[in-house]
Length: 169
Image 1 (cartoon, helix red, strand yellow):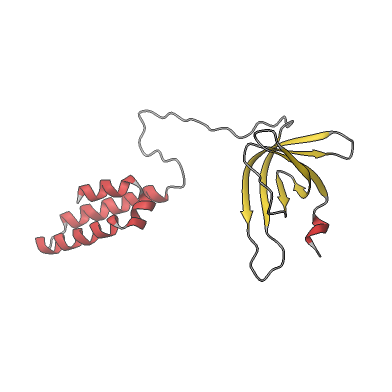
Image 2 (cartoon, one colour):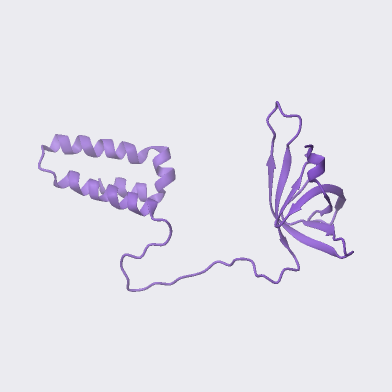
């Protein structure tokens, strides 16, 4: 089946400056719009307009534009995936929530992966320091841990926590 059969909607793309392009063949699927014309300029903050069968015009704000290049061996498939929000929707977009916690211990927000890694590495550094082994073995273990924590990938994952741990060694 060709992609043209999937493009059952006609839309107009309006840039942030108000320049209108269209009609453009597209596939509107909920908050996603797929366009297979790679020559178009589509920018976040612009609008997508679509005339509905009842004659009314639906307006959507473009939130995100992703370009997907098809593999070279495929003749077609390169497209834009556009994430939108319908302007007339009465459903509020998700908002950020602020949580203030005071005088508490053991509170963790998020999935805990980095916090658990940092806690484990902190425990490891303290165990090395308190181990009943010669000082040169402790120094060697600390140096290897510092090298691990200084690696660019480790610092990218752990962020500033890696520097804090290096400072403890």
